[in-house]
Length: 143
Image (cartoon, rainbow, N blue to C red; front, side, top):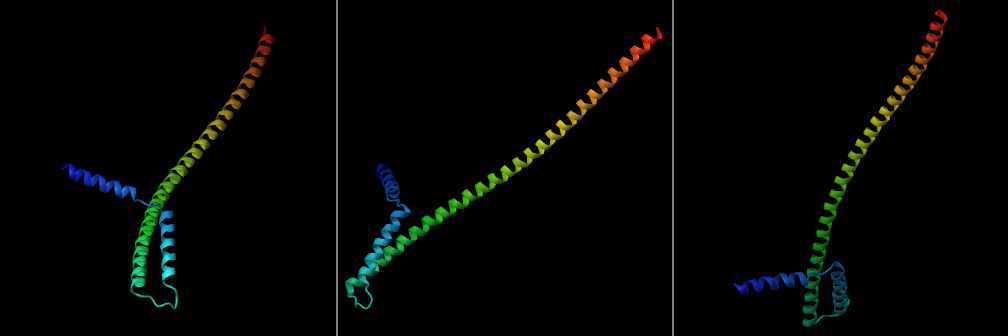
């Protein structure tokens, strides 16, 4: 049982330790491609070992290219996921902005109505004061 656990741990370690970045894969691909071009010079006849070397280089190039494509597709999936999250957040932001503007409109209407009420109260207070003065003059005039 310990051997199986050790083997699994070793495989996981090797898998994570051998993970390569896109830049390292690209540089490795360029190196292999330059080696391939050094072997396959146009017009040159290749012997068996050179042909085998070029085939092995091509196989490695295909493996590296497939790894690069896999990395790009993984990155593309992440970009699409982040893009959908950004769109969701933008939609929420728009919704909150609309709610804020509508509540701001309500507050502005309440402020205008309050101002009108205050003006009406001031006018009615002035009118009451005028009627009170007239009432006092009439009351003094009657006595």
